[in-house]
Amino acid sequence: MSNDAASGAPETALPLGDAALLSAFAKLFKEEVVPAIDERIAAVRGPLLEAYDGPTGQRSVDAKVNGVAVATHTVAISKDKFVIGDEDAFTAFAEERGEAEVIIQARPAFREAMLKRATYDKDTGTIVDKLTGEVIPGISRIPGGKPTGSVTFRWKEDGKEAVMDAFRSGQLDALLRGVPMLPAPGGEQ
Picture (spheres, rainbow, N blue to C red):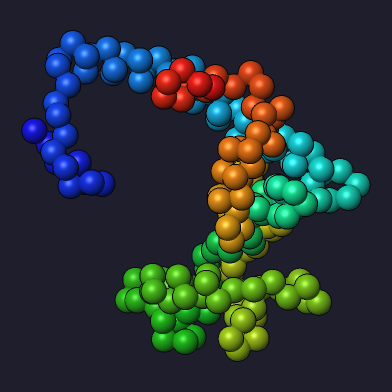
């Protein structure tokens, strides 16, 4: 017998045949319900990415229950990335600062530090050290600011509870039409 972690009471083992039937039902339920749920979860992605690309440039949308925001879907935006575009220029830069190894290459830690500290100066069009303002030769910028193709999701405080309350009260019934549901004990739905 296993222990039921929630109540501390011993759990009675199911007969093997019943366990097999329960397993088969669970697999069927998962095959039928999970894809439908996944479709509903993903339903905001396409329209939100289209809205972002549209004239308004809308980047996020709140999910609301009774006019109160319970969660936010946001278009994920890539950040600028910096790579060594001119190895010779960057190595010379590292060497001037004593950050080159005997094989005359930038030390890996220096390379990593400079890539992390690199920022784009819009006025001069150069890559500079954000701590010193010094131009860093040999680093190229891969511009960010473009949608990554994914959308993030974050619950608002008490959002989960509000959605469950709305579900229990029937406010979401119209939205859930066509989604297979697990019957409640006693055959109620």
